Image (spheres, rainbow, N blue to C red):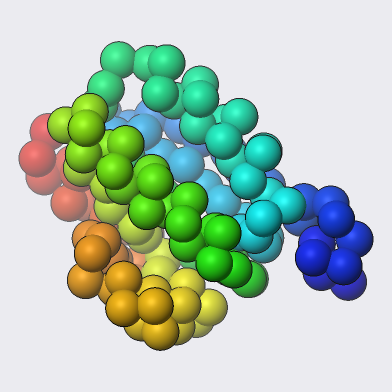
Length: 125
């Protein structure tokens, strides 16, 4: 049963550091019910001194609604205001389709494989 039906978030959020990047891994459904959890996690990130890169690993996202996409745009804008480069890694399946359908595919730096996004950040260390 989806989080839309239950009203509960089915998103797991973890994060870590890699040289000049903060990495956030999202797993599950990126929808309206997941936003409070994601925003709470992000607030800790925004409280840190800015890093050169923020990498969102979206490889395990199984669903994304319009509110989830709006949140990604908000994250991109926040990164731009901090001088942080946002990279979306693991963009395949659901996320590739949603980014394409919404016309936002070219608004983000998108990598089909997470490791390619990480290599891009490391190359600019």
